[in-house]
Amino acid sequence: MIMICVFLDDYRTCPTGYVLAETIDQCIHLLKNNAVDHLSLDHDLVSKKRNGLMLVQYMVKNRLFANRITIHSANAIGSKAMYRYFKQAQDEFKMPSSIKVILKPMPL
Figure 1: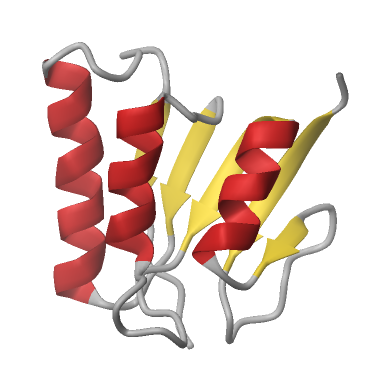
Figure 2: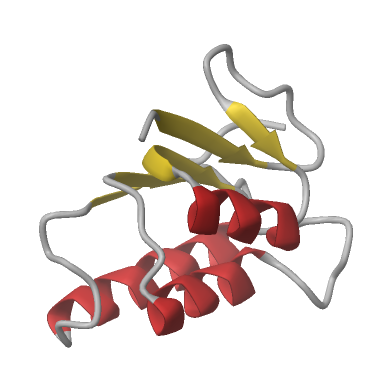
């Protein structure tokens, strides 16, 4: 299976070499059907009810992970909540500790 890199964002330009997911559902589809090397996540999406934290919770519950995860959201509260959720999942052995999770906000 070919490894891909996924960029979840509905506003920023997708970096070269990444597959763009503009919604949580698109991202889930990519995670379920591909091996993902790097996953870069935003918190604030068009739908206020379906944000990046909801995706993180779904990923942990369904054990859908990438080799590396970066939270690039500029939303300080949302991005920290996503980061803490992943770290807690690792502490509770719900997510492999070998997965590197980075909090690195990108400007809009």
